[in-house]
Image (cartoon, rainbow, N blue to C red; front, top):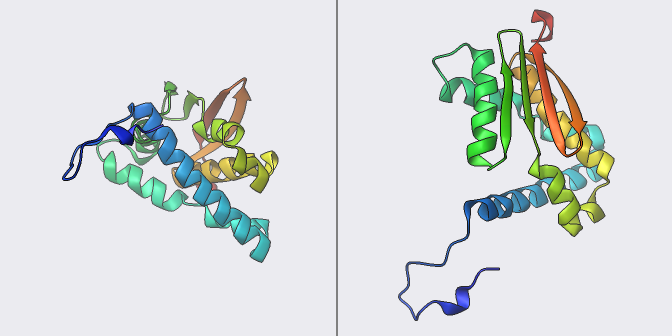
Length: 171
């Protein structure tokens, strides 16, 4: 709840703020709602595979990683950028558990799934299996473009990304 009923009369240039975690939730709720609406529309018009393809942004994500993290090899930049982006842009509580040349492991509790369970309109628009498939499609595509194979597992609320270096033929 925003207490905007307590601001003074105009002109006003300062408004009550919320904690960063709440603002991250609000940003993700808005974006996820728009993404799911787009997914549902595309799936209805062109099929599920076309809808999933819309969200395969791996080439751009890998480019962002190489651009923002330039002083390390591209594969390592991908993992480091993923951690920074999820923790600092999205406010995810994330742990980089392993980072090597051939393997990496990242653990976090994706807000993406909490949004599904707490924001009631999402579950009326898309089934949970399709929602999870969308999440995994996005991250598999990103990992591939970042030079990694990825295994995604769930341990309670934790999501674990286990990365292994992709074979050259897969890149």
